[in-house]
Image (cartoon, rainbow, N blue to C red; front, side):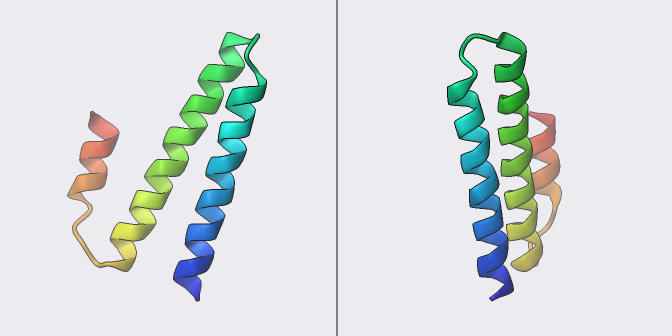
Amino acid sequence: MIIFLNYMFSMILFIIGLLVFVSNRKHLLSMLLSLEYIVLILFFTLFIYLNLMEYEFFFSMMFLTF
């Protein structure tokens, strides 16, 4: 149940980020901030997944680096 709630929370935040990205076509700074928000949500989802599956967090460090 907790895994499902984490993924639903991540998906809702990701969809909100996509909606903000699509709606702010005129302002470049808003688009860049929404892209950064989407990347942070993807990192959060990856971190939760790796934490629940008890994998190493080295991949999350690689995600942040590259």
